[in-house]
Length: 204
Image (cartoon, rainbow, N blue to C red; front, side, top):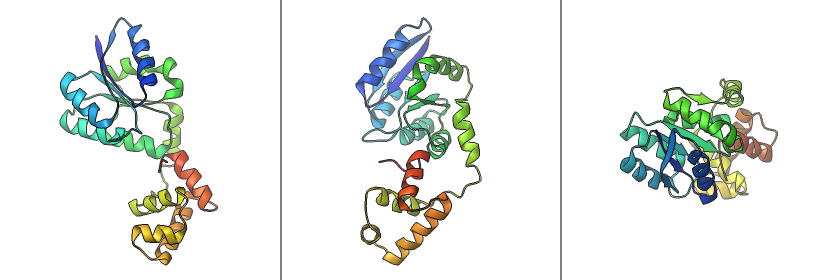
């Protein structure tokens, strides 16, 4: 039996996955968690064969939880389940130690197949997401400071407000914004935010 832990802050998603796994003769759902911290506790307690991990959750993100679990249990096999594609988000998850990355929209069709494949030791990522990563492989990544600026812009802050929140000058913020636009090949601030959200560089 493939023993599965599901981690998602939405009970409806957990229930749907539980029902799907319950129809399979070679799988069983052994535990559930609603955030990253609970995921670590449940992993320690149950040592599942496969963990299905959402990314955006309260208390502790899925990516942080993946890193923490893999640090403690290097053999852990984790599949990301998320509504967010985006090459940056996928790359972060894989770097943290995920073995698979699946969008929730394709769950029913691909989830069971992915669980079995990762259990056998394979890595699974859809061809569309792999192509997106390849498309942006030569892009210049934003620095942590530039990501902070982009997040604040996405929150509707002016350059002056961004400067105040980051304790830098308004001129510095203008410089950051220019570099962000250049790196993302964006026409303006709104376009940069749209690209940042689509690629998973920032989230709201």
